[in-house]
Amino acid sequence: MTEPAAKALTPGVQGVLDGARHRLGLRVYFEDTDTAGIVYHARYLAFFERGRAEYLRAAGIHHGPAWVERDIDTRLGFAVTRCDMEFVRPARLDDWLEIHTEVETSRAASVVVRQCAWRGDTLLVRARIGVAVLDGHGRPRRMPADWRRVLDHMAVPAETMADDTKRDARGAAEGSHGEDKA
Image 1: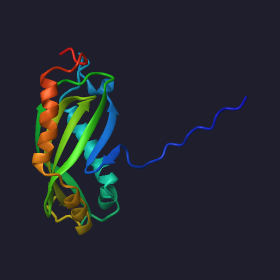
Image 2: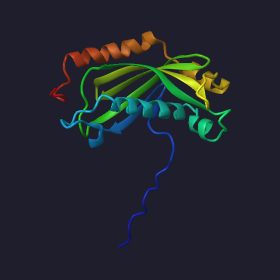
Image 3: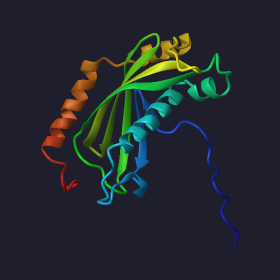
């Protein structure tokens, strides 16, 4: 009897770009939790970082090569400059989460991103994160024109995003339909 051929893993975009919103699925592992099995608050920063990186990749902005494949004087990267997070409900060990990422505004050398962590229809965490474009010496730099065009085109007005999170926050306030025992 022959073994079925193994499917090769392919490096590519993770998640789905649905209009201007990127959705990235991820599992909560033991390493993400405290001793009670609840996701440690700082892990959401890592989850959101993955969401932003995959959003950029899905939008055609390959920021890895812009940092790695250039010399120190011409490299470009993103650095978080501001982070405002609201914790609505806890995530737990083995939960399947979706990280939603949208650009709110894009400027010459910075971007404001809104991100949410979901478990099914339950909003867990929402964040508004500012990032700056820096060169290899850590100084602010204008982003390349093609990056700016893409991010400007993908930007979603804050009032549009607020409608979505208000609806979902209302659902979270009414309960999580038995999914959450906290």
